[in-house]
Length: 244
Image (cartoon, rainbow, N blue to C red):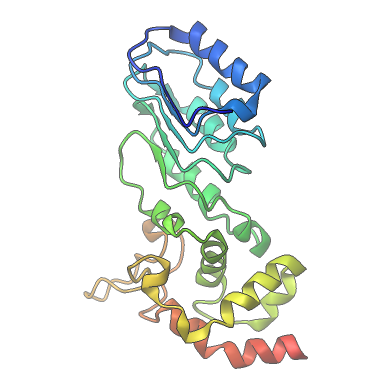
């Protein structure tokens, strides 16, 4: 039976001990604890090994805390990010100081991949914290407990908030389409507060509408239309396409 929480903080086992710990969990991933705390353990160059564990389908880690160890190199941080592409359990990973000026740009496609509707739908919807304490507003959207709602919200926000094109639904696979139909059919029962408790699409009030769901990082502003209204006003067109 796995530990709920394993706290080895302040035990200076270093890189060798950290490597052995990760290897042990790789040998028996179902024994991985949900919460792993490794602060002040004198870890220097073996952070990358945690990415192997995060790629394991049976890994049950929900929170990892590696703060107060040696600074993290940019390429190692990116490797950890890459390992989260198909990870749906990890919610928080606390890291020591990261030597990177563009890590945020690497995080955006993980959380909000806009290369296609399928990619957006399959983005990481679980991670709510990554890094060394800096603000990451993009991750707020992932805090909603229903990940199907999060996925649908991201798709609608990017592809339908401005110029609704019902034909975009043709590009969806059957499972995604089914989820989107269920989401849209809720209509006015969906409220902004049900998604995040805030309007992700409100303007700043000074005519500047550059801070949409992803703000300055490239995603779209919805021009004062609530996501609820966007969905509701297009239900006839969507249902007409579905019934066609």
